[in-house]
Length: 271
Figure (cartoon, rainbow, N blue to C red):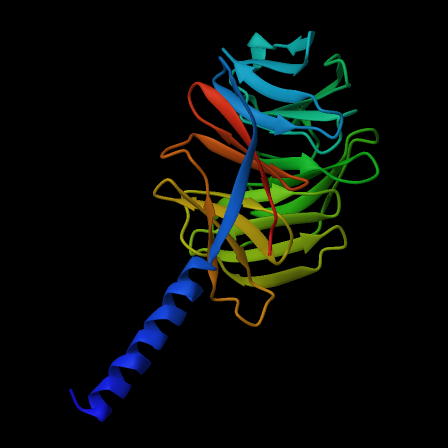
């Protein structure tokens, strides 16, 4: 073997080694910290006080140890979405009846709002808790994001009409986030400022962590992406044990994986 060939093979080996190291570095280690069986239809997540929230047979419940609180409203049909941002004021959305119910921390009803009875025509297809006794609303009639003051019964539009249908949405107190059918990522704040945040990777399920970060699943694999970094094209795979799962939730470095029979909580450190 000639010296030139040996040198070429050595360089090829080094290149391959660096490639393997680089590939391995694109994984986030998930350390299992707890696992338990659960008999629910949908696991919703945890609050900062350690309570878990779930739905079984359309009954919404809140559990910690032996403490169990439940709420059901058969007259409003199926629960479409639950907002857990404020554990003292929970939001249950019943899309079929264009209604929302606000609950206190013991799941007693605070108020019930039927948007079909509002003076301004509203058909809600997205909702979430906002600030100062307001709810985020996406009104399907005018295709605009709005704020609704449930104490004053006041409604105001904050965005221009959206040009594409919403594929996924998520809210915090100050921001309405959405991803449209073309996987474009946007935000709208309470003052109506709309920002294009970029293109989202194709996903089956997703959870937005911040305007720059999100966790998503595709084909039963879980990934993390940060679009703010210079190497924003890098996607990190989160290394979990489950081969399939129904849902995942992330809060304060705890990743919860819900399968049909159990929940596993992992500790992860996002790069």
